[in-house]
Amino acid sequence: MNRLDKNIKHKLDHMTVPVADHNWDKIAKRLDGHDANRPSFWPYATAVSIVLVATISALFLFNRTVETSTVKDKQTASVSSPLKPLCLDQVIDNADQNDISASSQNSSELETNPLDIDTNNSNSTAATQIDSSLVNNSTKVIALNPIASNDLINLDIQNQSSNAIKSNQTIGVELRNFEDIDPLDNQGSIALTTLNQLELPAQFIKSSSKIKKSLANTKVKKEQKGCPFGIEGNSRSIDFYMSHDLADKKYSTDDASLLSIADMRKNSETPMYSFSLGARFGYNVSYRWNMHTGINFSQVNDKFSYIDPESNQERQITIKDYITENGVIVDSIVTIETVVIPGTVKIEKMNKFRSLDIPVIGRYTILANKNLSLSATIGAYFNLTHTSSGTVVDINGKPSDIAENKINKTQLGVSSYTGLSLAYHLAGDLDFVLEPHARIYFDEINRDSNPIIQRQNIYGISTGVRYKF
Amino acid sequence: MYAPKMMAVCMRYCRHKAEAEDVLQDAFFKIFTHLTDFEFQGNFEGWMKRVVINTALKLRQRKSFQSEIIGIEDYQDEVIAPEAIDHLSEEELIQVIAGLPEGYKVVFNLHAIEGFSHKEISSILNIEESTSRSQLFKARKMLQDRLIHIYPNAAV
Image 1 (cartoon, rainbow over the protein chains, first blue to last red):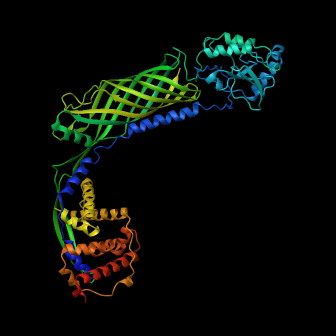
Image 2 (cartoon, each protein chain N blue to C red):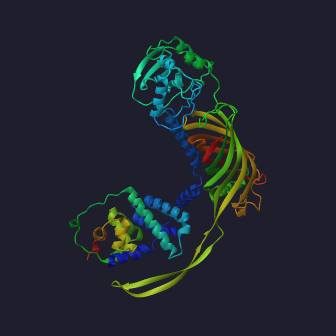
Image 3 (cartoon, each protein chain N blue to C red):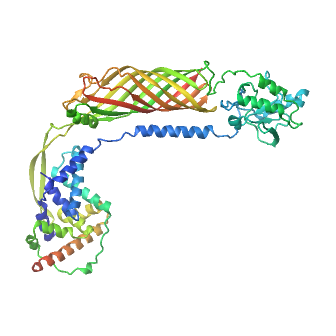
């Protein structure tokens, strides 16, 4: 450093410039706004996850691709009406197809009535595939010719026409019987009527009597296991779940003199990862409605951070100044300074709020196929007990133990519950369930004697399994 | 207590008082909200000063000042007596330094007044060490030129 630099440094090192008052006002405003209005992102996350779940479900459920996967066991399928979604049978593999063809060739009747359906024979010689358009307008039937197994006919019931379709594609689904078409159902009766009037190519169908017979003899089919749509009064389930939650807390007061204390509460309590877990028993009460009840345990966590403004700290610091000449240190001066640091003692504690509730929830199935179902859930949680532990700021602005000073209630009343549930069929009677949800508390958390009013809402995503029996 | 000193530091790094006040507000906001980060190692004033300087440098980066390239041949090879500084008030000296091109001003402040080495400056500003040296050289030349302009008798 040359002499010019040294002189400049000497002149400017101890220079002071007065600071205008408006700077402190701006700094104070920034400090007041610091983290005070941290928006809770959890409601938005819940909304986004609900939209995501609905979008993914719609993509799956409205996919009209014919399945070609094969499995060993054959289940009895049910025909869909436009009001009822399709629960399709899974498979026929090529071997089964040949069996059908061979058995049909052994029957003279079946040769002339290739679309005969023997409802009592699980190895039905006639197979009809309902394509997905039936779900919407119930006017088309694609029939598989069991004799020439790769041949299909497309029956357009509404327009009363048919045409042959040649396909080498193995049909992935097989309809065993028409038992599930309700003759009183509007679309079913249309199907019945138009089949009567249909003039079908002779080489395919000579008589549709058996089809008409099975259409007429409809009966309510028993619930197919794995089908997301149940039959009234005949389907039960049990859910085990865990939810990853975040609580959104709001603080207010009717006493204007305590507004700063309400602010202190808001600034000193930070929501942390919370969770709930439980079990729910479900009962199918109508075609789309299920009712659930059970037990739910939830724990809301938050972090209490508090800087005591009266906690001055005195520290002694040692400063060593080196004296150099021509870049060489020739001497040093040691000084000890006492520094007083105000408000530097920070108290940090974890607060825990535990509740035990009885949920009563209705679940309405919106969309479903054999793999996925999308439902809306709505209901209420009835609180049995609530315990709080930890520290919060009291009305004097000092840290205060929640339990000792009886700050919160021990029973929180009723909270509402809404959610969107996506169930994915895993295997057999087991589904995986994903359910973003929101719980809104109607009552405040604090006791009536506490002038600082605390309300909370909980947003979460629960994952679990559902066993149907 | 420390604010006037920190304001003087801001004035050295900024182009004008309004910008210096912005830097001061940002710096004190950081100081108040990160008070617990001060681990009682060293001078508290020194810690504050480092926060202020870092804030000023970040503001400079945000504003993306263009380095003004001025050829060294533009400067007369004159030297001024270091004592010429004594004729200037602190405010006048601050104004002279503030009038330097951005790059020169920052390097001059960091080296001549804060005492950082060229290696440290290259690390802080993410420039080459040789760039730091040349910027300092040019800063001194330009300072001398301006001081001579103010006090022609100061020329040696």
